[in-house]
Image 1 (cartoon, rainbow, N blue to C red):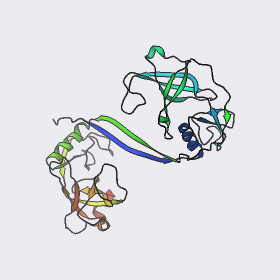
Image 2 (cartoon, rainbow, N blue to C red):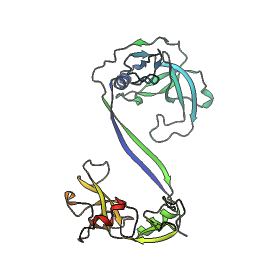
Image 3 (cartoon, one colour):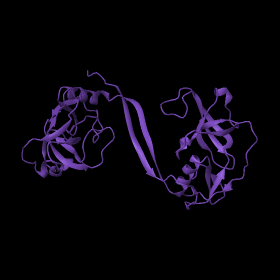
Image 4 (cartoon, helix red, strand yellow):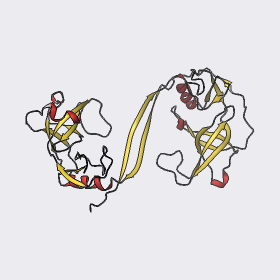
Length: 315
């Protein structure tokens, strides 16, 4: 039986978005130690603010300043902070309804332990020493025993010098991936520069990479079939934006490739040919880098192009 593989996997990318007038005012306000909410059609004050009324869907523009103090509405203790979380020591995740707001804001509460946290406790914002116009300008909340702030929000024009108009948020997911029996066998074969799929016992289609079950018939697959190594480009795209941490010059081509003997196209990079000469039907073969566990890219074989009828079901 094939050894079941397991390995840590990180999926990470920067998410960049522009900001409308409401979100721009909210984040710029944080930079200036000002918390803004927005008034809805029914008179409620939402913090964080949204651009459209959640009930009527009408556009919202009535901004108001609320207090930096508030009340914990619910909480959960985090005994082991993870990478890039607000605090490096154990803390509480809290929902805080700021004075003057009708909804709660999620953030971290710096507290000595879970016994020091309770629903209804009073807290205030601890501002970050350096602020850039992001939710992290609120470093965290901290317990507060002072006088209650005003509960009446103050109208605000939302105008600041040098407003924040866009943000880039790093998205990251750390997890342990276990590919399962079928994909483990596929990955082990790649170490020997072989490509192995599995055949469905009912429809007889060969799937690469194998899933352990036929997606069409819904039954388990176990019969291993070696395919390729050559194949046919069924469709492709030209990549013009360079990815972070990927040492490949743009433009380059990424394609779906139907390996000989497979009934499912896999994807791979095409090299060894100018990007504007890649075409559907191009015959290609894998190129392995020294010590690599999978093909680095595919290059033209020099064979005549495959006829469309031979791969049209895989486009």
